[in-house]
Amino acid sequence: MQNRNLSTISNCFPLVCRAIQTQCGILQQGPVARYELVELLRQLNGKERLLASKYYCQLPANVGSFRVLLQLQQLRILTATEYILSKEHSEQLQVDLIIFLETEFELLANLFVSAAYDAESGMKLSAILTDALGNLFAGLVADPKISSLRYVEPLCRALPADAMVVCMNMHLSSLLELHQAEDIKEAFASFSAWINEGVDELTFVKHICEKLFASHHQEALQVLFKQSNMENFRNWKFYLILVQSIASTCNAETTAFIKKYLKSRVLHMARTGCLTALLHLLLTARATSACTMDIHSNLDNYAKWYKQNIGEMSYLLRPEHFPIALGLLEESLPYESELQYLEIHAAIALSPGGRFVQAYKTKCRSYLTQLKKGEKSQGV
Image 1: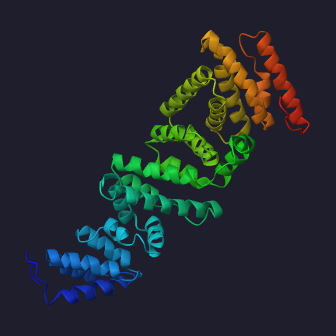
Image 2 (image 1 turned 120 degrees about the horizontal axis):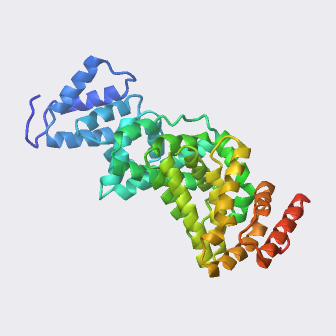
Image 3 (image 1 turned 180 degrees about the vertical axis):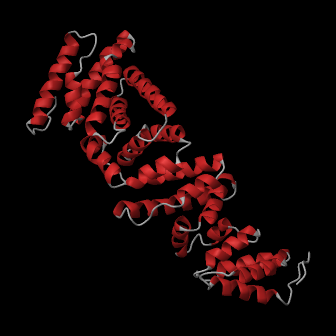
């Protein structure tokens, strides 16, 4: 077959189709067979290349299918993106994507690049990939041993910066959706259990944060902070696990970014008088403080943060905002259900003191006593 710039179909084209089908049915391709298939494919004209791509997409999945797809992609006959879009409404779609995530990293990278840069199908690909990641992560929650996430490091090497950000956002979205809390009170009650689960069992989250997000920790936190401040946010479990995972693996620059963000939220909650803003602040501070493997060190970290940002908040706030913040702290008491954190609140002095501060501290200690007795708060 000679290379022809014609729209005619060669008599040898059926031979190419048979070669594609045969190679799809072979688990391992020898160098001679690989060379022969590539040479056959190189000779195709424009119309034959299109027909070959359509023929491949109609074949049933087989042991060598994705090896052949990679060859087609390398020769620019058919990309992984085009193949996946052809399977959009097929039951085979999610099966194929799981295989991509497990073993076909070059094909997977093509999907993420297209999701980032393809104006026509980018949104559709993003939805498809987000679903696939969600299925994978849900499986890992049920059984952390089903995947080692070997695709993470190859993606880091393959994706340009913009595509990496798109990839990161898909991962964050899929992870957040893995659990929905009843309300923010559940997040306070379950905080330590969730963090421990993230550290001991759901280790894939930390792996993603440490490897995939390594150069994008601040961008990831910005997404998480923005999402978690939206009205009716309920994805608290994996928000807290993600924040804790990033805080435990990030560099000094990102640690400074976290501190600056938390300080800005102290000002925000006092200025707006928004209870939800304070509750979000307290949960986020606890997650970022839980950055070691030692519980006592994590509590010490939180106590230091609380002293500097809440105990001494009068130095940060305008005078008229201090009583607003104090009122919010009092309103937050019924949400507290973990003794170790409320003990910190009760123990740390609030400057500059005074009658209203003393009244709050009295209520704080009273509520702490109720918790220790196992009683439920009733309108403290």
